[in-house]
Length: 180
Image 1: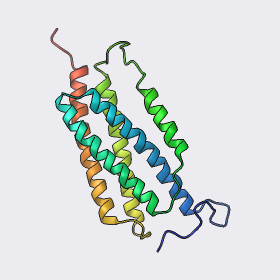
Image 2: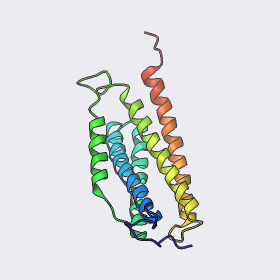
Image 3: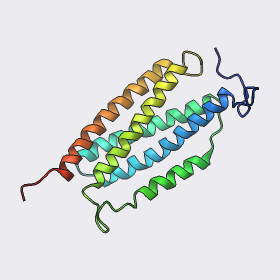
Image 4: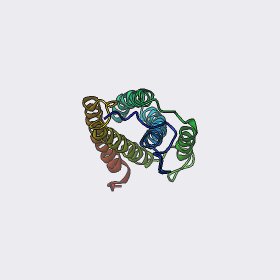
């Protein structure tokens, strides 16, 4: 079945939004999250530059940028509008989140990597859920490439596992008792 039926902004005829409109909202929400997530990856990778975690985060940052481009291409292929308001709001919220002092006012807190990595992990888990949802939709909508979406979901799972490893190391570094 071709999922391109229905108007991009209309309703299904019973007053409910059309599946095409709902898909547009869903993907636009994920675009906003992905845009904010990439900004968070950039900031976290920069903060960790020169550390073992920094090299992993720089590679993941580049992969997340590719994932965002894939999502943008998919939105364009579906003929869906991009609403910038939510992406702007997400970017502002991401930047505001950087202001939390985590117990320090001048220097970066040892807790900051834990918080950063937990946020990145949650974002990547959400991205994986998106790719899996779209892979399921591919069974009903020929605009979606199931094999490509499977590869993206697997990459998100690998990214999440790597972030969780970094997060556990950061937890130990910040919170484990020391012999002092």
